[in-house]
Length: 186
Image (cartoon, rainbow, N blue to C red):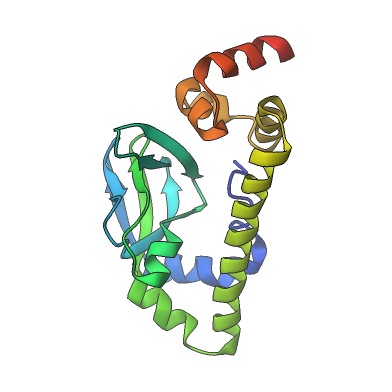
């Protein structure tokens, strides 16, 4: 899966090695929370197996799927961890999953080790920003069909893992609109 493509780049091999060496492998049952909305996120991880969805719950009770993390990818609310603020999203297991987890304090001490590690942390933040910026621009400059087609080019197996209603939420369209798009491009 190539969903969070910036995070899986080889330039992060030192970070991946830290997770493999010091991360604690934790199992999450389907529906179990990795992080909770409105609570500071104090851990991050690399998904060993399974998948996670990032969900924002509005005051009206509406669920908005805003992201995913699949096997081999980073999982966690980086902003909440970095700034010590309550998370705007919750992260929940989509199926039985396993994550190599690290406490944010350990990650911070890894970055503080030397200039190279500090640069790695900055590079990770820059890649996360680039991903968010690209998604923001797509929301303004691309049609829903263009966003759907681009997502399928990047992640052709996504339809096997994510229900269409969730995918519609991620693409910021109604499920009926996604159904029409899918009929149109078949």
